[in-house]
Image 1 (cartoon, rainbow, N blue to C red):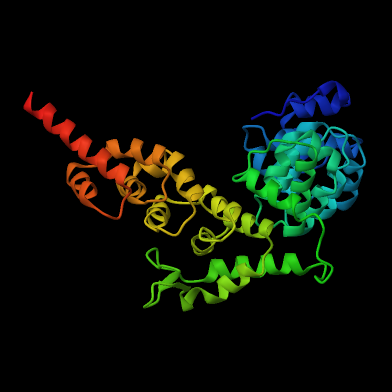
Image 2 (image 1 turned 30 degrees about the vertical axis):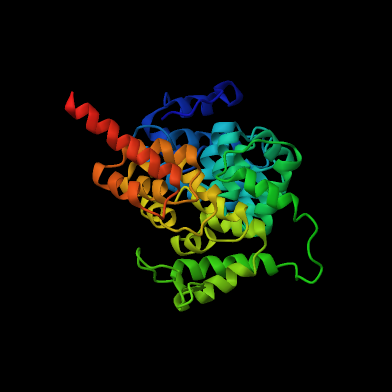
Length: 374
């Protein structure tokens, strides 16, 4: 797709090359970064334009941009580049922290380029983006991208989240309200912790959660003979790592972490953490079926699942919510309409469901019976 450039900012020769109106040989040389007498900024602008053009020179220009000579790159980064050119450079050179640092100072850096930086940021680049608070407040979507980037340090994610909360921004982050409440309660760091303790703990836990071999049907808790639940031995190392985390760390792990981490955190004693686990975009219908079958989860967790139309498409999730005594009555009664007759009969006689759900099940069976007789 052609770049939307203001060609009047370029020299006459650069205008012809960028618009494809110059001789083919000259354009081919420009795609390789060879434009005699042109300023570095003009050369890079031409290459950026050609890299987005629907011609066979696009690949050549793209490769050339990725391998710009230091002098040419330095000259271009010292100029006031147009927003579309910055976007191309972020795409092609966005993994180079020294380039990103200079692009962040560009007057015409826009939302799309900043968000792309945040989305693909390494730990170092994430920190560079996070220090530009004015830009983040101007383009809050970049805060969302940083927070949801697993490579970004926990301390960096906490800092940009705090920035958003202090400035009363409304972000599209899963479980944002829970994360905001947690971060506001943790603004004073514990003096006993080393500066990098949180980052190291978050990284170690993330690695452990991703490498833990978990079968989809594995249950992280085991019931003892007296009915008390304990963490399954296989999950103990991960459980211990999670236990050392702050609330805000647990919430971010619940949102971004593995299925094993979510299955442990959904049973956390803190409601904010448990709610974040089922608010994760990675939370699946299979996980929802396992969670809703458990009588020890928070009612907040069941409420969030019940309100999620995607998760409640599955029949087992509906049935589990109806039969779980912790499901708020409003949701259980609504879902009861979708339960099969055979299960309604079981529910109507079960002592393990609330009495009002039993009564509703009997009433629904009676109503269906009357309709059949008509």
